Length: 294
Image 1 (cartoon, rainbow, N blue to C red):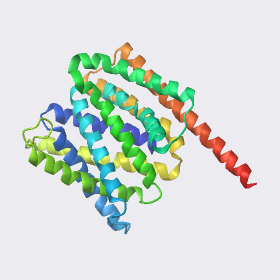
Image 2: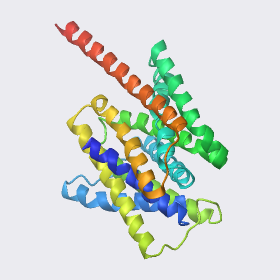
Image 3: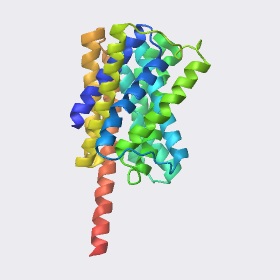
Image 4: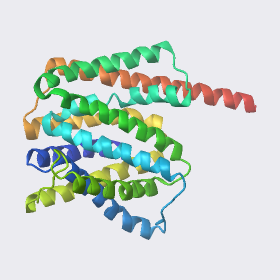
């Protein structure tokens, strides 16, 4: 299920790139993405008798939703102007940012080797960003902004893991993001990225497919995390880079340069090392707790 999700999500980004290059604004794509998520999750929650809005921790839920909204908005702008593989590779510094936020906000302790891995990961991101910055300017940094916001989203999601069910969290996130995006588009209709374009029939089909793929991909992730621990599933996320590279070549004729492949390799190696160290620390902690109970 996790592999399926990671191979589906680049399709979402690919559709967003096609729509963006066709003139549909990123705000409009975000709006359709989350409205359709709400519409698709609604019958599932009704059938499972879980349709309710949890007002507890509403402030944190709004921050979480805004973090995901900004993530999606920035990333869709990036993929409009940049190759898919480059955008997703830069975005995958998110585990490093999440580790840093855990230190700053949660007081977690990290050792020198993980610090080095984080530095190497950011160096890889800069290697990928460098040629893109020459082509598209500051837009090349949007995947970094998206990665930071997604790390905030994941941090809050961790907090909610035993408080609100994943399906309800996804549904409520769509309920929050959709009206905010619509209001921003109404308030700033002349702003780049928030303007409204009347889609043609083909674009409506692509927007519906985007919402369907996005909801299905995230549902697969949700179901995968109910069957296996997150630290076991984490390395499979890097399949998304493989899918993005293949789709970028097949549809947009984008082939990453050797320099870019080197940067991607640094990001992936750093992310897998951070996963490995975190997994080892979890195993040690579980062993210590087990020995203490004995």
